[in-house]
Image (tube, rainbow, N blue to C red; front, side, top):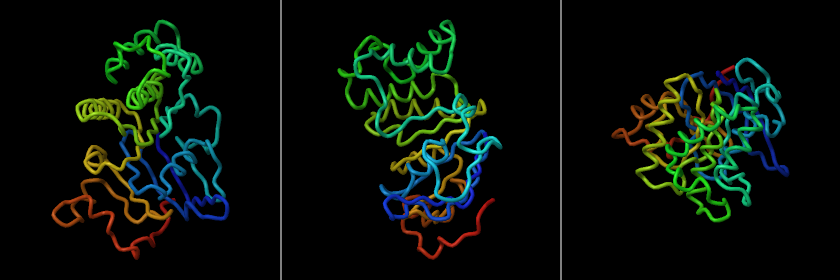
Length: 243
């Protein structure tokens, strides 16, 4: 699903969080929003999802203006803070969210078992969420976002608190989803995760200061060190809208 963001502004309590944000995210790609805490990444994700409204500008997903209820069934969202029911088990949480998407019981059982294997939670499916660690909740949240096989997957720092072996397994699965046509938008602070993505945009203080394919961005940095993106001169913030 192609995403078009055109001249989006957003402020909270007179503090501007997003300033004239314009970008295009091609369908069937993994797009990374990169930036320090407070740069506007999560706010931009929430506007793309239709969870909050922009003060100005527009967003379309698959050619449909956001917000729109019919898009909700096509989207999977994993927020930074887990939105799970503490008194339910891992399996019951998956079942609940699958039910919201009207997924059949037969399809749910097969898909849920497969996802729990991917996020390494199969042995804990009957465990109550309140008894799970922070890292376990992250993994469950990812499974919840994927349970209805969305065409657009939006992940806000999905691998924070996840061990390196499982993190690699998750990224292999995300790339598999990309190859099957899923559009994935992800935020991260982890530099080596950027190289797992196809395209990226760097946000600083509510501005996009760099955007390109990951390959091209790396080629523009000294010694191919993608961390140098954080030191791009602020003069590069002035760019024409891509809409």
